[in-house]
Image (cartoon, rainbow, N blue to C red):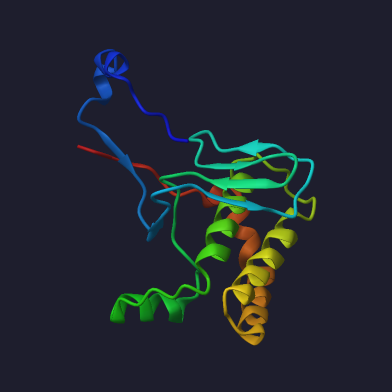
Length: 166
């Protein structure tokens, strides 16, 4: 989970960071109310993001903690429909959240690249989408594009820039 400062810690907070906010653009969805916990088909790895939002345990338990944010499926026409009509499709939310979490672990070097983990994450995305009501045809189409272009999102160079204000 993301760190929460106590009053005493806030008093000793780095003076240079007071009144400074760090944020990233492009996040549309956020875990609220309670963490998302599932059994993931990756056994034998323990990986955790530095901020604590994503954690995979050796037994396959996978957690997206409160505050985890992701941008949903990167399907251009869906992004346009969401923006124009303010529609939020539910059929890809669990799949895209899990997928973004695993890709984040890959991107930050917390899981090894080249061990078939990306393929497992891509297939799991589609399986969860179908389970949540997406047609198998649409899920297979998305899997095709994940296999074709998804690898770029696992590279360290695909990290979102962090902005600071003021």
